[in-house]
Image 1 (cartoon, helix red, strand yellow):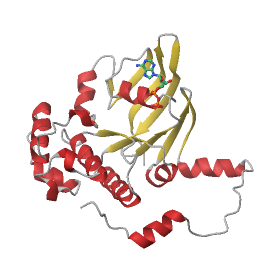
Image 2 (cartoon, rainbow, N blue to C red):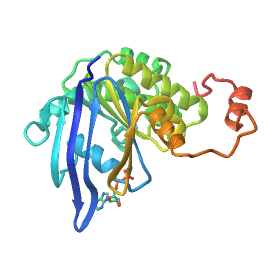
Image 3 (cartoon, protein in one colour):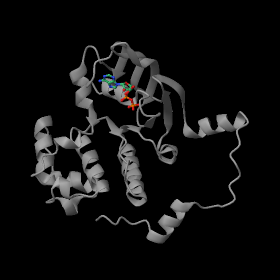
Image 4 (tube, rainbow, N blue to C red):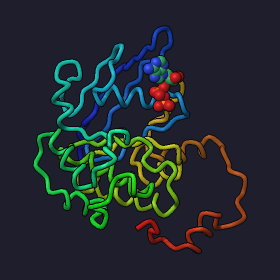
Length: 254
Ligand code: ADP
């Protein structure tokens, strides 16, 4: 099957004064894939994503999103992407239905809030305020808000940071679910097991440059082919397996 490019980044540069945070990176994202952007803190991931999301000015380079040129049609790009809002944007006094209606109004969309809450398994919390949700529920709600304008692409910035193992797995299921409905997902994470499980391809960024870009499987095979060998693991389970075995896989926060 021919893969369609949905995001194309060419020679992207971002300078903050004298400091070059993004040093001429190029990559493509294919339609319908889960694409991971990995790298240590300060590598330039957020800068890159925010430029693609039209939220930050680039210094130079070319960016196409869904065929639209960032320089010429940023508003068309905004219409086809979904971005997680900063949690500070959630009015504390409103419940989840009211918040969804508010965001839908901002996008000029007419939605059925309960259908959106169903998508992220939060119908039970329809009348709860955002601040009353658990960490996993907050993340799921914030993912629901990215879907309001029926985007072709959603951007998730470290959606599982700080979540317990059950809530993380639940979020992986949600992301896979969203992708299976045809939405392209760009995600950043510091959890390599998560990237390995979720992402079709990952770009590893370090100091403003892409130092690897491939499927997790291929990157691992390349490392092994280069002679790398992990110190032998004598146990066929780890502490996370113990934790999940003892506490079960069901969510506790509900
Ligand atoms: P990451 O998301 O990978 O942690 P960032 O894109 O946030 O990386 O930051 C990349 C580099 O650019 C860092 O060194 C950071 O300090 C710097 N940086 C980010 N935003 C600004 C800014 N507004 N002004 C100056 N430097 C910035």
